[in-house]
Image (cartoon, rainbow, N blue to C red; front, side, top):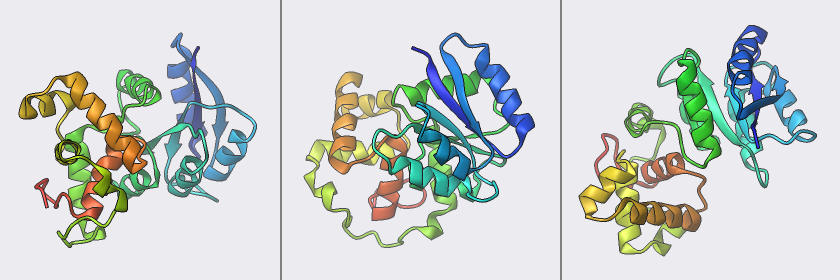
Length: 224
């Protein structure tokens, strides 16, 4: 079954460009378009969507607030934030709102397609190093305390899960974590899945955000 995509951008020309790229793929279908966040939310009431490509700076309702409202819904589609500039503060807000990642609008077509497929399969599409730079850049927005995390569900993690969470938050891939902890990649993937379930998070990006917010990891990538 084709991945159902909605394009949300106030620039019709950009939507047309994205639509042409996606239409050429046998496993993708653009099922809806919207010129702002409010229209996107309205569309989702009537149309089933798997992945939303979401611009951030739009009239009426911006992409960050639209993402927050969409991701709060049951069985919500995955959201990819589209930004004009790397390390845009809107991208950080979008990740906190529930987006599964962010991409630059001038991303090469191949990378955009790979990102859509990755998000649809449940992965985050922000490279760990990029996520870390993003969070380090905007760390003043986050609590500076390095005390024990206040997120109540962190206490539910086993010692090994907490260890894996710290490494995810520091930007390591599953393969790198496996090498560091002398585990198989499959085992690491299982741990990551359990961490997401116990903490009620959607993907690795939100693990990183939570770890910074709670002081598990400090700006610069070190453990708290």
